[in-house]
Image (tube, rainbow, N blue to C red):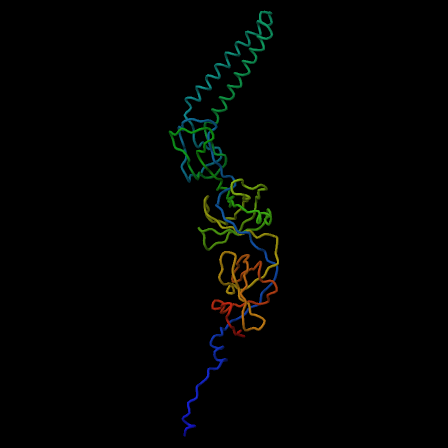
Length: 337
């Protein structure tokens, strides 16, 4: 009876405690291969022949014949200056030229009659040549007191209005040759990307204006010198519009598929934890298959459902995918088959 009523303290099973703290995970193999790591940059849509048009000389704008967004043809008159002062300068130069010409002819007759010296004759010739050059300059300036379209395209911006006074070379209008469908993206590349990009490399362009479209492109220009302000190398990507409506100033993200392939590691995207920029972590099973290691990795780029790793997975054959979000460096795992 005493034996029957004896109370025995139940001891907890250590194996049961281990099972309660164990986290079920799944592992996937690490794929090693040669990958074409894209060069990523961004820029604005423009055209190859985008031009800022200005007057050769300063003056008051008399007329602007176009508006923003208007289509124009090559040679079309776009703007003109008030010609009152310019015509007066041309007339003044012409009168001076005629006077020096008469003086030169009179001097030549006197020189033949020995009534004028050679020095006097040379001075008259010099005065005539100077007057002739001044007349040429005045006539040339009058010719460029108007702005004509240098190509067929569209006016995309007006910098000035009628009645404003502008200085020589100040932009008045900006136009592009959108009618020729030669759209480009202008980007800047750091030196580490510049050495990987070559003219003719294929590119993919993503536009916020067309979120569901991917545009094909090609590297058409790479500068050999860097910009003194930001240290970047200017490059241009020619865009294939494929019938889509584009406009200057649209923001574009560019992925250039460099021809230089690299040996990298590929893992499922769900294996990545605690990512910040290109730096992240992955968990891998330890040799006992019950504990884990937390390894830092560098992400080269992400494509589809895979992350391409450039550093951190050397000599690693598999990574933890399912369940990795619940792990710590001290977790105990059970690998699901």
